[in-house]
Amino acid sequence: ALVGFEGDQAVLDGALRGFVRYSQSLLSWLPDGLHSQDWRRLEREGHTLLGLAGTLACPELKALASALEAGARQQDADNTQPAVQALCAALAPLTLGLQAHLDGRASVHDATPAPRLGAHPSLGAGPGS
Figure 1 (spheres, rainbow, N blue to C red):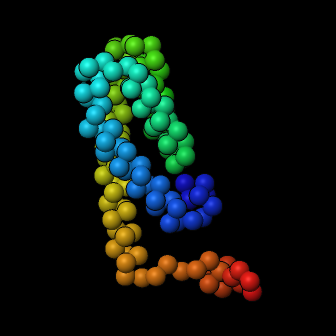
Figure 2: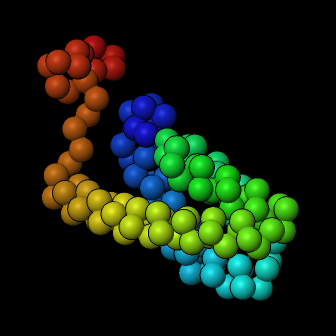
Figure 3: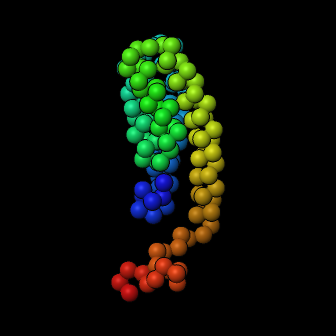
């Protein structure tokens, strides 16, 4: 995913933090949304997650989000329920793992300043050199 952020780790970390917050909210809402058959929001959340998964280069998550979006669009509980279950089963550990990764990066970044691009000899001279 770093390539999609032009190698900017700080921007990627920010996107991942936003994704974690969104995912946590989605995970807490999805069972209620399915129970109340809130088709419109289920479809919207599937579509939103589809885009986020694409941005973060997560094809498996993208496929699960697409299934949620399609089932909700058709207001088909028989297809939407397994899509929600599969999505929650995949998203929960991914969210926890990303949060742990980001927490670890934050403690490392607090202690050590980030290297500047071009500061390493193998990267060549920095800007303006």
